[in-house]
Image (cartoon, rainbow, N blue to C red; front, side, top):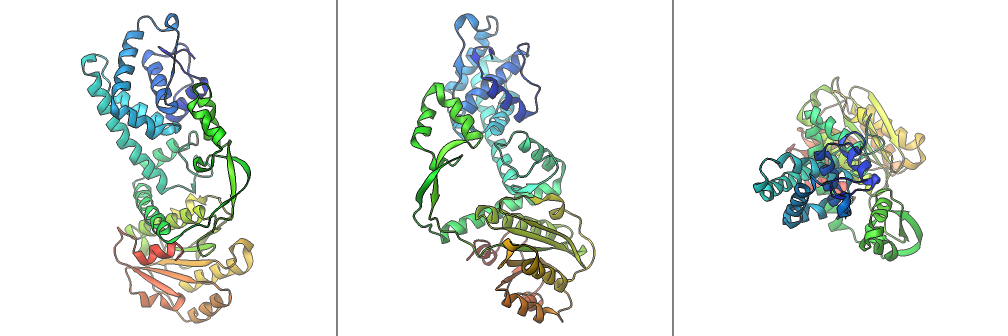
Length: 412
């Protein structure tokens, strides 16, 4: 569609408007909105196709050309292009931040305005990616099955929810840190076997794309088609086999939601559960979540790749604590309810004391099932949780993830 000086494909217009929640593009759009479409195309696609001179807007053309020239000459804009190329949501966010800094009545300062806009965009992108990383894998009304920056509409809905919910925002930030810690430990500890090409498949794994598909990116006429295929996970790539799988198997997390957990303890525990979910997704391990107080409140069992229900993770804390009851329920899940959760490890996250009279029997049952139980004791001595567990990590600092717990997350 003709904008001011560029021809912007309708697919790009759709992605831009969807990323920012804007109305569909029209030929009668205001000049500033048309300029936004052009900036989006340059950021998302890496370049834009100029209109023939006789089709460019006569009155607004010089203004738009000057602004685009300032963008093209600014190194921060070039870095921003590389940062958001192919990511429609982040490209839309960058456009929004750049436009906030532009002042059409001060054309003499346009280069400085572009620089300020690019800096603001870079900060916003870093913050958005960290927040989205924190809640990745969590399903919620309006979010769909999972969270990803290349899924139309979803990132905007997630960030709006995070903005409106300070508690969720804190959990997301903490979970993002824990995921990076666990992923870093995993990279240190694991060396994959050499993979073997088994077939050709469709997907978006850049490191496995066919050379013929990658070649489309450097051809201007095929670049947008390539980016569309990559966005839709339909690019041609090698299917591999023979890769080592790491980790101890499925995970069942028992998350304490009793009254004493309310506040920072619950935020820390929920962030750890999110980090565990992310690790399970990365390693394609089935994942179960049981929340409890004096009894089991919720039980969510998911297959590989399924999202974790938002309501289970972020429910309010109240009630007492029954550790034997939730461990028994977790063992019943492993023993009877879902074949894919056989030989799971149990992670028990709590700050509560409980009657331990049944703990020895439950521990024996876990050994028969070849199930290991890791306890994370928040603000209490490890020995108070030891009767149910093979290993206990004491959590003293709610701003950090201890290395012992990190190694367990990384499947050591």
